[in-house]
Image 1 (cartoon, rainbow, N blue to C red):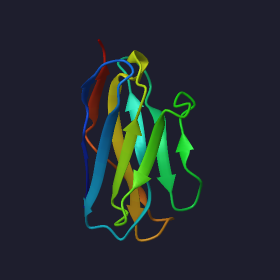
Image 2: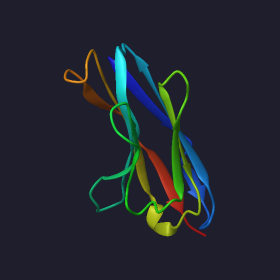
Image 3: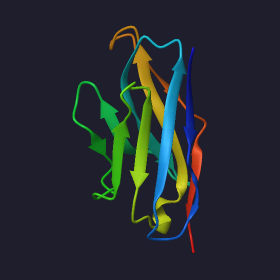
Length: 120
């Protein structure tokens, strides 16, 4: 079993920054992708940022250069640095890891979510 745990959410003023972290642990053969989605109240879940072993980094259109995603050398921890936050960035941010013995056998594991509120 694979566990995914997020940390770093909270309340921030507009224009501020937050750094979210996410660590995958447990019975992991290989991790093929890690990243973040977010879901605001009443909205669909949307991609924020993703790092993959088989493709270039991906970001949601709304990011517009404000966010950066990075990965530790152990490749089991990713960080999402969010700058110049706006109220529309308020949402629950979910981390996921796609892991398995092979890419074809891999599946996604999700964290429980980390709330982010951007408000003055």
